[in-house]
Image (tube, rainbow over all chains, first blue to last red; front, side, top):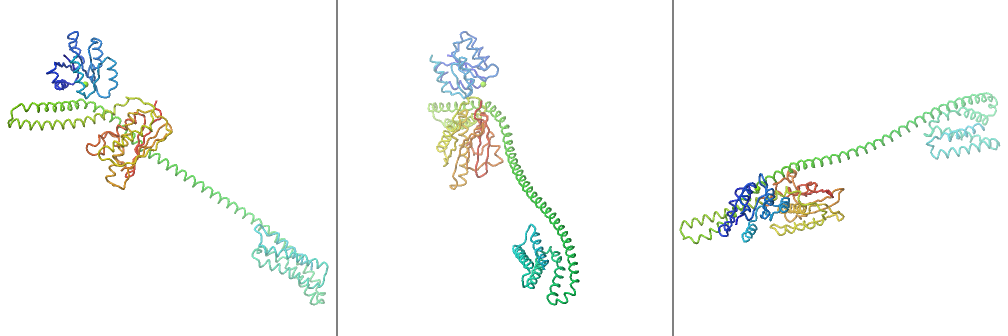
Length: 125
Length: 454
Ligand SMILES: [Mg+2]
């Protein structure tokens, strides 16, 4: 089960890999990382339908923002679940993300327990 | 002899008439009155030629002599001296005539012609004197009138002067009062201006800090996340360790790992501290979220001052405080972001508690901590005042008080952002915050916000 994580911060990869070490080792979770919206779209477009089960994306990124990317993904792959991650109390981004078809919204700093639950659900589905 | 009495009558009548504005003492008038009666009686007796003629004639001389004596010896009649001299020759001639006639009628017959002539000359003298006297009297009268007029003018000038002086004094004090008021207004304006300048600086500083906070937040999240992760990993390592055979090296590794774990916990602890500061800083720039709704300000104050009190009592170092609410119950609903504004009340009340706690530790039990919260309608604004009788704010730090990270609290007690955030929230309500304080006595945080922010 592939999950794509999009964030302009490269250390996010290490953080996620370590946080979900057990899931990766024992539960067949496969994490794929992209460091910009453009890169994420390229990864998604290699196959159709994409082999990714779900996307977790930062909003504040240089170049294409997470919300822009969300719009594109939703128009090309309406079935794909996208969860957005952004700063706490960013109500503006929250409403825009949800109205653009995001499945969920996680605030930074990420509460990894709720993220683990979300990923657990995806793995079981 | 009738002539002498006529002279008496005339003199008395004239004196009585000439009494002038200030008048003569009552006893003089009495003399005049009785003298005139006496003269009239003597005239009547003389006309009737009632005996004893000699006695009445003598009395006539006594009367006229008395009158002349009176004129000459009374200070009030001093100016009529000339009048006394006027009839003197006539009286003298008459007296001589009378004496000679009475004592030796023979001689009288011989010198009668001379006496008549003397009488005639005396009459001319009297008339001349009289006219002269009249003239003098008129001059005196004119002088008197002139001096009276001058005096009157002098008096009225003096009165006018006094009135003018009073007016000037009145105006002067008015001007002084106005000057004082203006000075007061100017001082107030100056201190308000200083605070405003400071607040402007703060606004840009606030934006800057918010920007910095935002940039720091992500790296800080990594610090916190990675340290947390590492603690977890060490936990796992700890679980794996018993599976490895004991050795001195293993002992050493375990010891070192224990240190690493404690260090990571410290990183995590201070990371969270930094994180809470960053969160507060971001609160600054958060403005614009949440909307202004008509709010029962008094209710909000009651709720949150109470909350602050119980929060303080439940925390370490509780103090005894008397909270007095003087809320204007006629206050209309105020358009507020209730969530934000409750922080204002919380922050100001907590701030007062902290200030008074310091004073308690210095002053001891003599001091009774008191917080007063007042609300009042003031024109288009609503006034909110939070006053404590704490140590006050020294002049030199008053304008620094609203600056982010300025704190008088020791160590890790405060973030130094409470008042800064409070100020930001008030500004987002288009209000103003003013600090009025006297060292050692009181501090008032005075908030003015418009009744309706459209
Ligand atoms: Mg980012």
